Image 1 (cartoon, helix red, strand yellow):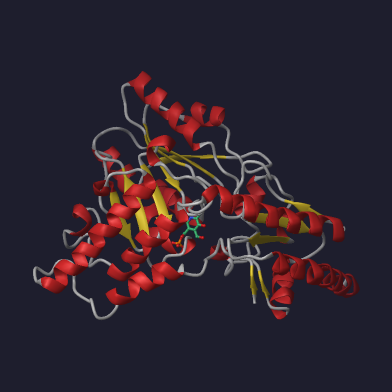
Image 2 (image 1 turned 90 degrees about the vertical axis):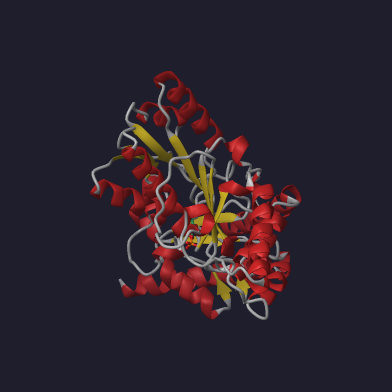
Length: 391
Ligand code: PLP
């Protein structure tokens, strides 16, 4: 199989898998246990917390382990917004219409609880405007949540500028506005330094950077108002109840540490392959166009529209040739709606319906890219002929 859907999930890193195995068996203790097996498990969780904190330039006490990106994002958005409202700070939120559904639906849930939400749009490259963001800030704004990198088109948002604007506004109005970013697609491709970014909360999902599924990270800056989503035991500094997924947490620490190393060289190599794929497709397939920007974007992402095609048919045709790619975001594959991200970028609905996402990894080879370039033009032509004769 040629796997070009690493934005959906990517294989575990060997070192992360090796590190987690002993915590499935024989070191199976519950970290809350006061005996040796419990202490050993707790020690492994503490060590992973230190690794994650170091990778993010955070304090260990600011790192919470969760069940994945979706939980982290929900906890950040809902937990901070409710805590701020309870403190009397207001009930207005800012987010964007190109967030992952985890963020969009959490914001919509808060609308149902009486919050007012401003959904910012983006330009044709998928970028949110700092000026528009600044205009949306209000004295009753309690939280802004903007993703660091988009999962469908790879556009990187100007989070540092948004943070600067937020802090200036907060200082001018003597009132705090929290800033959360969904950084799920960033590890391995972008430096994630929470201090440099200037965010109060940041979410990660381990299986996107070589950890295990069912594990995630929520960074919460010290003193960020927060009401926990989960109630029960006192785990994770009273902020996330439930017995820890020790093996997943161990893998998270190792994988994030590895992903944070050598970003420049990895990004250069993968960008070269991505550009080769893009240029090859555009040259060989008439009626193909890129969606999104090619400048401030993740180096491993390529989103291309094929005129007159249904992307799901092309995904199936490539699958039969042993090539795995995605039509839109994997998480919305069970529904038949056009990508909300492409629509927000102003991509016409027919073009959005014929769009594929190719997402590469460090393990992707030039031979794999050349094989895709060999197979794809024929499959597109075949499907176009079939579609034309069906009309
Ligand atoms: N945010 C982004 C940008 C994503 O790409 C994804 C997954 O595709 C998520 C959040 C949700 O992560 P998970 O499905 O691991 O909970």
